[in-house]
Amino acid sequence: MSYVDIHCHILPAVDDGARDLEESVEYARRLVDEGARELIATPHVGNPRFPFDPTEIADRVAALSAELEQRAIPLQIHGGGELHPSEPNALSNDQLELIANGPPGARWLLFEIPFAGVDQRFADDCRELMARGFGLVIAHPERARGLFSDGGWQLLRSLVAEGALLQINVCSLLGNNGLEAQEAAVGLLRSGYAFTLASDAHPGTRDHTAALGFALTLRAGASSLQAWRLTQANPRFLLRSGIPAGFNEQRGVSLGRAPLPVA
Image (cartoon, rainbow, N blue to C red; front, side, top):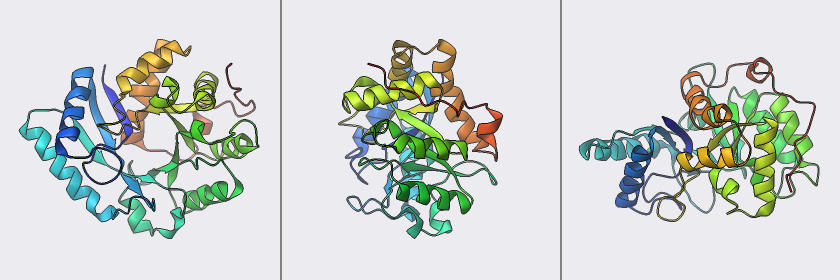
């Protein structure tokens, strides 16, 4: 196995993730023992609860990477960020570039779903970010309240048709975010709408991993090939190739049917 995690709050003392360096290091050691080789460090960006300057990301990633190298923990960390939905377009393109991943021409952002539910404002913000030249990976859509009951899915499905990709959480498959989120995550997985699975780990408090996610996707009804794609091939593709124009059309996403929660 060679897991890749694109959503992880591993940087110490920047948000509600790892509280100190030792928590970051111990989590990294565990990841390597489980077969992880790469991850994107995604501190909260634009979240009013956790003020953070994205210009600090490169130096903080370099510092943690140097510590892991010194301790012989072979985990490659890439800089990124989890963009908060409150005022995403208040950031300049230069600021967004600091948390984007992928090669030139296919750069993408990890954009957090609003927990209160998917609404027209969120859809408009997504389209504005895409119009500015960024692809979108929408983080944990299953955690949006009433995703399949209040019209939010229709908005989200339209964004997928326009090029956005969906990332579900290990903790949602575990049921840690409630039954509604668990059922929505399973529905997105079984329908093929979920492109990748990530830990959204917060070392020290939420320590689940992509390796656990692999097992949970199998338990939820995925084939071993789909589980491999969700936890290894697809996140690696995002790092190496980004989100090329027209990618969802090329991968043949079934956009005509909405996944239903699984009872």
